[in-house]
Image (cartoon, rainbow, N blue to C red; front, side, top):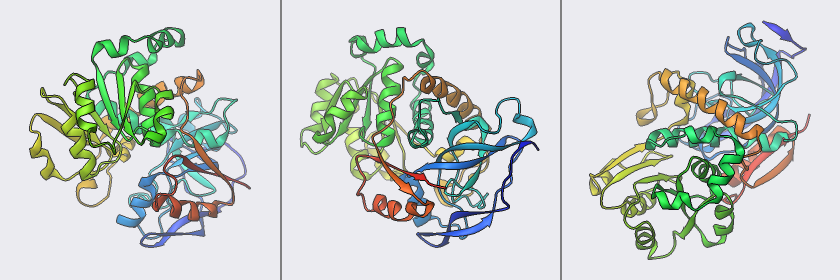
Length: 371
């Protein structure tokens, strides 16, 4: 290893002593692989996948947590030409991973795969940076799952502003519906879609209409309205062909597939859906996204959540992270509204319980860790 600073052998991290629970324990600082850096964690963000892994697929003794931001404190020799000790980065890790239980974001230190990390601009704080990585990576997988083009995201900011400020997006008929556009992933996806030249539509509660329109949605539909499906089909002229479901329940899948036009299309969810429902629309291609495949290694979870090694996902994730890094550096990506909790790492525990109970639906919770 090269470019090192003092690092303790033991740190404190949130590990799973039993199903559905986490506790702060002293454990060895994780080693880093050739493509990784060691990060001293300054802030972590909470995601629904964090408690779902704990509740549904507990790995005893594994460190939990995914989204992080912090400072590089150790660099492997193979990536030392790309990053140095003291650099501020954000990213995500596969926490509660049965294949690598010693590493997760909810610790004082964590090992991060550099190819999936992003530099933090000087003007951005750790809390905001911690909220971005997993959501932006999931949005990238959504683009690929739906077969959407994303080369337009790399255009210069002046040209992009001109395109997004015009009504050309709607005229193209390239409608993409984001069910749950007011979620943390949804607000990021709306921005990516608008920048890429699509016509993003969304469903959410009426109370969130202003927020999702501000994030790029051309139009918002109240999912509680009994006419929601008919309203979407009328607005799109029966031309809706792409849907990303940020919730992934029986009810949301039913609504999404019903809203797709008579020519069929593609549906992708952020959660495993009942396969039996696919017979309702045989003209719709169905898929669901599992973000852990971006690390390229085997996902050692049970049942439908297991994945073989997928190096092509890692290659895509690297390209996507590079593109998102530039958008962040250019100030073109707006973070989801945050609820920032400052204090000890243990503050994650009550914050996760509140997320599990649905008490943080409008904001992404970030714990800003105090030394």
